[in-house]
Length: 464
Image 1: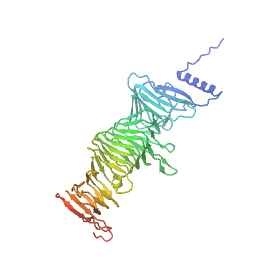
Image 2: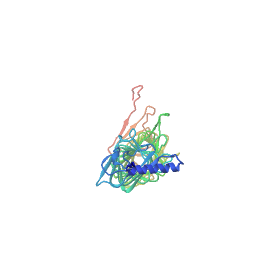
Image 3: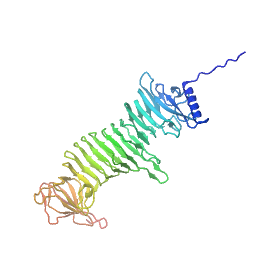
Image 4: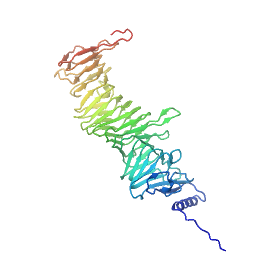
């Protein structure tokens, strides 16, 4: 009696896997030399990434090395009678990390909602593909998880939204528009200090969230790894901002930050922000520059009836510029050299071009002659000028170029007459008892204000 041998029908995934393994063995002269690449297609239902039965690779969901020697190229393409959501969270992968070679979303009905865990696209040596995330149609919603070591490309029919998700060592393959109210966290590593490589492209922040840099900590040195911006950022959404991390943030030469929301935007930071590029406020935007420290060697400018607000510890060795209809508020403590008013030596430049200029902080004029004139235009003092010599009035025409309003002159020597239409507080110090040295000039109180003397207190003697 002849035995009948029944052959089990193999799934397309099994056939694809066997073919790939065979090709690898042949190419390697009898032994596999690298992992085999298998395409994993989602079936268009709403479910979790770890639902193996919804993948063409059933009984396995895509995660490189499962089974051993297999890598995956993931596709959310055709399929589904209507919109569907594929959820990726920390229940998938090993310790919440899923590794794949590539991800393509090419279905207008598809949404990948990553709520937690890490999708890691690190390309392994010998792999034929890897690293690419292409959102050609549909949506990638990075909703609390991490996308790591990927090249991210979003097509004209694709969408990328972020609600407190993280981009770690990601390179852009296209312009990127980030919508939503959550923050987009940018994370670097010890091995790669650039958390987001702009690669010549632009990031448009249309929601109210932050580009929030989170710097890696080197456990050996206990130092944080600073990051940098090497491309263009458009802060379009009201209240959107850039926030630098603990290692400091550098805006590289050639990079641009444009705040154009028409509302409020900000550049903040836990540590220092160094600008070597161009920061612009346009379209009637209030731009607040308020990191722990801010050092400008590039350009900070306002246009279109916008406002620049400097606060925190800041300095300028580059250019600050504005124009008619714009406002510049100089807060915190700064020097004459920071605003281009140094009488000698090096410093930054400030070109107001008819803008409204307000000193809201403290201008430290030590060792300098501070001159306001037709060249500088009229400035408004609503803060403090301390030390040095002050020239505010034209001795020939009598024109005044410094409006003093309920503000303070501390240990200042006059180099011209001074017109007051409001109260000026005169403050001395323990080391210098003369708060205002008239130096032969005259103070003309033209309004209802006071010359209001405020004497320093000697903490040692408790005497004023």
